[in-house]
Length: 103
Image (cartoon, rainbow, N blue to C red):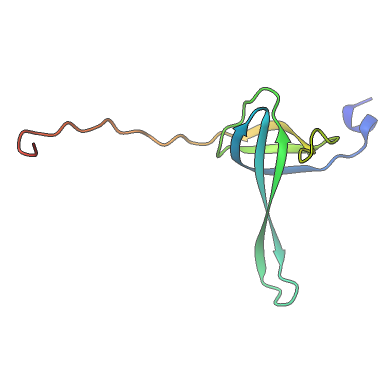
């Protein structure tokens, strides 16, 4: 039996990691687009999910896939499955030495 067949269908969500400040826990922000109930304009809805990251592999800005799991703590009900895309690190420029004229 496969993992899914044994445990039933579990929800999966794809989102961006917004915090890794806790040990083995990441905060993932998932954005979905839904029509406004009255005006019918499509608007972005965001929700944050706390997910378990056992190996602490995710970094802020990464796009990750999380899957539903049993309650792991008061807020954690999701597990990190995979890191889909790594965040691009900003390039750090070397500090410029002041010239004689600027001193």
